[in-house]
Image (cartoon, rainbow, N blue to C red; front, top):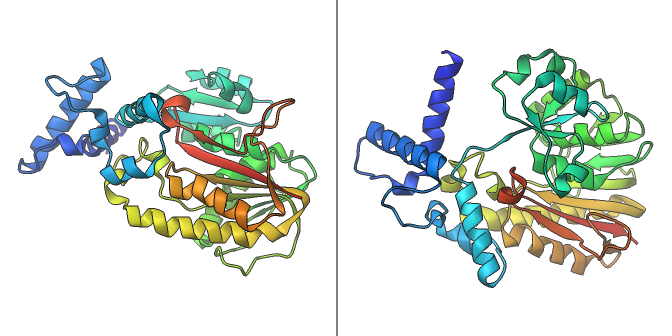
Length: 351
């Protein structure tokens, strides 16, 4: 199959799930796909649908509209509608250059644009790629000069801000996207523990670290229970916990129809248990960072409130510490505002 054919199939599949509720379930599949592509064309060219006045929140399951806290009043309605509209377009592609190499990398690859606003400061090595190259086949990727990583995920690493020589733990490392960022920020010094329950994901992580020529890490399996992989005390711990993934629905439009509200309740319980399990592994003054790529109340602010109430030794601290700034111990990154996956990030320090 040629690349153009693969792109066409992907576009048709994504359009089908984005416009699922607009389609006639009685029609033949090929007719529904054709209709979805036509709706996508209308939206991409004019931002509206011909003869259809339904709000774009129609594209979001009712349970999710009830679970996500958009804020009160008119501002909340504006945020809800902006989020819903953002889900109906293709997700941008973001890359993360190695520290100090981003400008040269962007010039070499071409078709790169830095983030706007506050994210330009928070994620100085991020670029949005708008070209058509297969990035995995570029010499820069082979040489480990960049990673394909969403801007929301890059923001998590930047909030962690580990220092060279420190000891950190990425407790839910997955395939290592955020781990690589942390290791880079540590300048390949100190020690980064990486954990996951999947041997397959661990193998991918190790391969990625090798390509990036980063070796300041140690992998130790962990299944998220109270039985920790080490008795080490850390300067910082990142818990990028399993979640419902509501923040990734722009990139994964099918997920909005397969995720259920029961998943939210179950995952919130898992998230609380993970944070409880790792809290005692911090050194005095050590920071705990909690991140999830979801926007539901039960997986974000409710989880934070539960940990803060149960652990008085854990002091909420600013997610983005700047001189003379007021305490902002958690924050939402909304997809429509950052042009990436939605994220929630919270921070504590052990007293």
